[in-house]
Every structure is written in structure tokens, then in C-alpha cells.
Image (tube, rainbow, N blue to C red; front, side, top):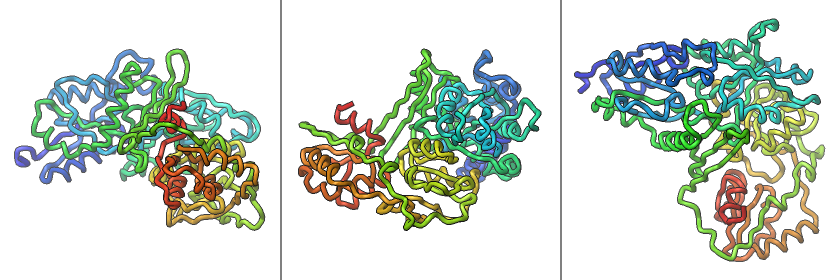
Amino acid sequence: MTGEHPLLRLGTRRSPLAWAQSGQVARQIERLLPGIRVERVGIETRGDRLSSTALWRTPGRDFFTGELDEALRGGQVDLTVHSHKDLALDRPEDLALAAIPRREDPRDAVVFHARVLERLAAGLPIRVGTSSPRRLALVPPFLRQALPQYGPPVSLEFSEIRGNLDTRLRRLHAPPDDPRQLDGIVVALAGLVRLHSDDTGRALLQDLLQGVRWMVLPLTECPGAPGQGALAVETRAADAWLLRALEPLHDAATRRHVCREREILAEWGGGCHQPLGATGVDHPELGSVLFTAGLTPDGETRRRCEWEAPHGSPDPGTDIRAWDGGLHRASLEDSGSTAGTIPPPPANLRNRRVFAAHSSTVPSGLDFSEARLWTAGTGSWFRLASRGHWVEGCAEGLGFNVIQPTATRAVLGEDPRPWLVLTHSGAPAPTPDAEVCVTYSVPALNDDPLKECAAHLERATHLVWSSAEQFRQLQSLVRNVAPGARHACGPGATAQRLREAGLRPDVFPDRDQWRRWLNLA
């Protein structure tokens, strides 16, 4: 078999990113098929030629696939590699999807020039480049809350931008008098990761990413385009040998998520220029979670979280008496104490990865401007931003361990030191190798809140805990809960705390999903 096919010609676009990601696929195929050599063939597409025009304004379709399809039909190449989000929903019948390799990170990121802090402090507009209707719909309202606030309201100006990834990054470094200069650009994190993992691409990015500031956008607020981060390997439908040979390249989880995302796209009317984001992920505790957000024709932003538990949704039973911890939580930022007995974080925070378990764990008066600050969710992110802190990303309510692979991508900047975790007294460490710094003590609840909670807890059949700290404070009352009561919480530290107490919690993505489960929403 390998003697009949010693060489496979792989068609790809010529951009540095396309060349890098097709090279990675070529190496996978050569490992999969010993004796086969894969040769890349660069092909210019219509989308590459229209580098100065927003494609959603341009008549036509298949901007990045049409020429590759013709080369495949004509026998100039044996297979092609595409970014899956570029594929139309209806592909030609004479071509076949041979494989969807394992997906890279599906999130968007905003790359900012370092001057963005000066412009924010001066109340000047922050100029951001993107030509995606989806990003134009979802990113502005997020950035208005996520960027540090120094007094004047955050002002944003968005400009259309096209071209290869390195071309767009160069807009950040344009001279001050150049009207094309931008303060930030929105990009797919997967593209940056793939380009940075390629030797040639890494050299190309080295100067362009020097000193930049990052924001990795949460899927809960800004899901990626359907199929973002995934690649598609296509060949001729009649090439049965190659279709069989490439089957092991398929990643089942990636294929499952991409197919569901494209179903959502079809429900919205199809087309890769829909103002729609849809991203599915697998979570070790939750199972499959799909985040969807988009702008409806009437201008309304619609969000949805689809959740498929790993073993199916549990039966809530009947005679439900619910206790919602979210309605009883004491405000940590109002009730906490940062007494002088609590040691401050280490002095050297330059480029240090710091995870704040809650916004209140970041002490006032300390400079975190050179740290790479991450936090638990968007609520803490926005509160920290309102205090003037730059936050690079958040765990999206999914738990520290889930977001850690994203936060430690080499393209974002490497730090050989362990994570510095800012937390409050009594909180469990999120990972064994983290350097934990207790910056916050939570005082015990006084008698009145305890009595109120005790009365509710005694009659509850279903309870949802809003945090590990809330459970710790009320744990002495749990023995009064009715036998067989169902405890629920989000993933991560809260679930860990409940399990340590001998409970088997039902884990939900958020309280809304728990309320829907009990038909309370």
C-alpha cells in the first residue's frame, strides 16, 4: 500500500498560519502512515486576494476553500487542510471529510499594545480591530466591563481589519501618526498557538508579541465561531484508500462538538458570517457543555448554556423543598477582613501567573500591574477591573484546573515559577504545586444569619451551595438537613469541599441549570 502511495500532496493556503497548521497535520499523517511522505502545495485563495475587504460585505462564498476544492478535483493535490470554521455547511458531494484532528483551544483572545494602559488612564478611545460580525456583537460589551477602569468610562472604537495574522499584529506597532494604528486586535487563540509552535512562525511572532498585554475571552461571554480551533482534512470522496487510512486522525470529542456547533449555526440560518458564537467543551465533572451567544435580527443578544451530564441528568424526585445558597450568600467583599496579620503576596510579581480565587483576595494598595492575573469567573474579573486591575483571563466558573492549560500556553508568555494563588483562610489549594498566599480572612457569621439559614436548611430536600467558603461556614448545620437531601454545587473547589465532607454532590455548570433541573426557573 505504501509502495503505491509514497507521496501525498497536501493543498493548503500560503499564509504563515495555514502553512504552520498544515505542516503539523502533515507530520501527524507521516507518523500515522510510515513510509508515506507528505508534500505541502501552497494555493492562493480568493479570500487571500481580498485582503482589504470585510468578507461579510463581499458577495459570494467559499472564499478560503474554492481554489483548494478545484485543486483536489483536478488531481493537483490528494488532500487539503482547512480551518473548520471556514467550511460552508453544505460541502460538495464529490469531496469528503477524511478527518477532524484534535482541536486546539477554541477561545478568542485580544492582543493589546502596552500603550493601552496610558490611553485608558487618559480617557482616550481604545482602538480595536476585527471584521467578524460575531466579535463585533459580543466583544464590545464584554471589554467595557473587563478593561481596567481608571475613572473615565472605557471608550472603544472598532475598525475592520483583514489579512494574515502577522499582518494584523503589525497594526499594533504602526507609527503614532499612522491612521491604521490599533491598540488591540481580536484573534483566535488557536491560530496564535499553532503559529507559535512552528519554528518559522515563532520567529515571525517574536517581535510582534514583545511587551503586549493579553485578554483571553471567556466562552461564557464570547464563545468562538462554530468549529473554531478545529481543522478539517478533506479528500476526494472516491479515494477510499485515503479515507480509510486517515480515519485514526479523527478525534471523536472534537468531531462531536463541531457537529453540534454547526447544527446551531444551521438553526441560525447558516453562513460563517453569522453574529453567532457556539463552542462545546468537555469537562471532567460536568460532561459536555455548549456555550452559545449571538445577536438576533432584532438586535437582542441571546445566550444559552446546553449541558449534557456524563451519566445523564439525575432524577430530582418529587416533594421538592429547595435551598438556594445564592440567595443566602454573605458578600465576601463586604464581610471580609484583610488584617495586618495576613502576609502580603511576594514582592516580585513581574510576569508571575497569579490566580485570584475571588476579587476580594487581591489586597488593596498592592501593585499587580506587572502580574499575569487570572481569576475564578467574570464577576470577579469585572470587580477587579473596576478597581483598575488588568485581568488576563478567568476560569469561567469551570474550575482552576480546567482553565490552567489555556493560561499556560507558551504563546501567552512562559513563567517557570508555580502559580501564585491568592485565596482566603480555610480554602483548599486548587493544585498541589501552587504557592498559596492567604490574603483574606472571612469572619464567622453571627447568630442571626445562622439562625435564618438553619431554619431553611432543616426542611430542605435539595440544596445548592454557592461557594466552598459558604459550605465551610454552614457545615455545622448540615447535620440538621433531612436524610437523603441532594446537595449540588458548581465544579472545582466547592465540589472538592463537599466531597471531603463525605457528600456526593450533583455538579452543575451554574445555579440556573440547577433551578431548571428542579423546574424552578
